Image (cartoon, rainbow, N blue to C red; front, side, top):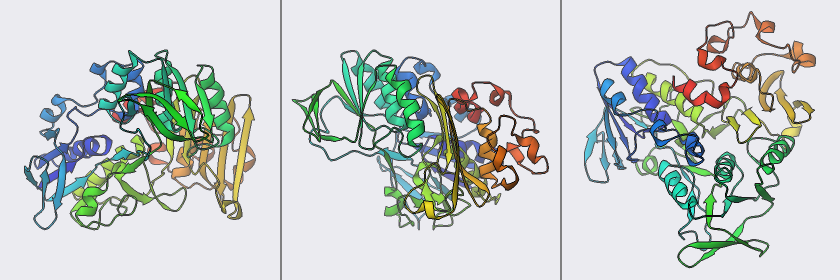
Length: 442
């Protein structure tokens, strides 16, 4: 058996490792267009703001590939999948054959069509190359603009502010993290970031990027001019579906897969940011661009590629844990009511005390989403209730009480989410959220 993986980030690397666990002898090849060994994109800000050195940035090195007998082809981009011949072609025209193929090509930053977008000093915040360029540019910069107030944009803003850069975040919406949290949570995080002198402008965007060869200012839609030495574009990502589309696989916004991560070709699987999958919290097929999900996708996809048929039924698109300054935030599942949701029998339970905010969204006596700000204790417990679609009808009046816990559900089998099972010490740390990537990767 020949296994071939396209993509060397969370999903691809987890799949490679899992395939070797399941199959000790078969050939495994991983092709990545990035020349660097696998690293976590979630930690880019820690490299830029000097909390993490480059030597500690990689989560897999040459030793991993040698020890696991996995062939790594780095710095090569796959440009075509020939399904009938069961082979792929790289940009140097080298070919690799496969019996089972995994597409884990991730996503690419969305770039707006704005005059001046190609000027020097305009960056995205998606790759290690981006981080290296930004870190070098910081040496000669005093003012920066970040376009977009999602997680990536705020991570970039925080990292720049820690380098004593005057930072302004511009967001076309009316709050921070508009796709992940609500206005109440946004106000708490905004106040926390403003303590760092980060300026935030809502309901605005850019009409042009100005400069001769290099950026020196941006013009807002209201025609005001803002001087800056660098601009970070962080308005979202789009799945890298080009290969799949060219190969004739079924796609929409992402590659369509079933609960076994199979595409419309029975010998081709897909995982990570590039796929669409049914979300148990919303009941809809959606993208799922988070590191944690990509790791799970890679694990399940590999198992199914190796013949261990196991359905993936716990897909939750929104699941984020982050702390920009002093305030930790967890968002999980369906966190916002939109459109005609108010007519679909959703219930909302909230607690707001100072800068502590907790919100649960409930439908049919099941929790389908949550937001926890500042006090994130037991967030894993509530995530387990969501993943396992547990009936909480008997406990609605105490659902956010401080003593509400797994003890109320001793007869339920939460599997790996059950607090009575032995868990790795990494997850028992009081600051587990700050180390979650390392916990997930073991």
